[in-house]
Length: 473
Image 1 (cartoon, rainbow, N blue to C red):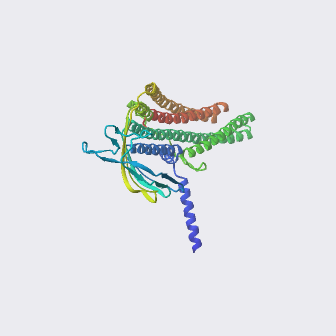
Image 2: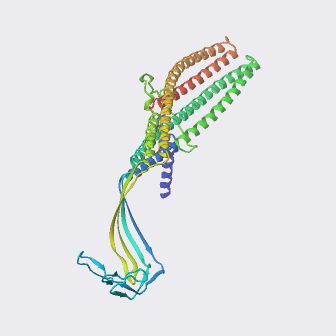
């Protein structure tokens, strides 16, 4: 019983796998899968995340920065010093000033007595017996917190943040551009696969017609109604048809692998196309006259100019005054003097700093001029590429019109070729037309069908190129 259940589950999974493998892949489904799996899109998304995080990092410069620090010192070094004994002069109150005056020995009529060393002789001296000093640095540690806040940095923080904002916007536009390019590559791969698939069908149909003709000619040749030369003529055409079929099958296989690569799936995956593609993807109306300014490339050029303007301000900020404040609170412990601690308390400190550049031999002026030159170059590049975009849009619009006319004319030619092949076949069967004329009519029909398929493919691709040039993808 368990074995039957296992086989049932395996069979059900196999049926689900086959059903999934047989899913009809329309153009929209291929686009969705390519956008979800394409590595270029994933890279663009990561670059967008990077730009966003960079913008947030620069925004943090507006706010104070807090930090904690700590240090510990251990050393066996001991600093010792002795102050020798000495006799110190004394001072007495001065009634006239209320202060103290040197208690020098004064002889009436003579004045203060000066010793041989040039120092006055005092009435009294204080005896200092000397002192030993011992400074020990071991087991000293300190810990605290500090805060720094820029007040004015010459506009550097604002310019850097606006540059990061522009970079974030450029990354978002680059993501849109990557999406449009993925869609273009997907459409190219999809319609190429559709084209090769139709060419395989055409080659099979042509070979089938020649097989039937060969059977008829061989049957007629066996009863003496046709010459051996007619059989050889059909054989030559069959050889050509066999080569064309092989080329079409190889092209179809490579086109399928390329489409799988663009969609990000296994190269051996099956891709089932709709029964007909003649009405798929016809969504372009060139009469709307859109502007190239909606393209992400154009918006990226505008952002580049804005970025260069902020770079100029950033360079200028290096040569403007800067003002900042810093506050800290910490605790110190250690450093003993004669076995008594010198530091054993917490303290608060604040610092304000001002830096004013004075003279750099023209460095700032020249750097600012260089940054302005880059900004002007970016503006000229934007104008130049804008003109190219306008020409590209006009060319894409013309290609759409031409491809629409080409499809109409090739469809008409195909209809005429089909009618010609039908009439030629009836005349050949009635003996009113030679075999060479009938084979030529089949060749003309095959060529007309191939040109129609190629025209349809070019029309779909030209529509995609137009949508990209118009910024509508």
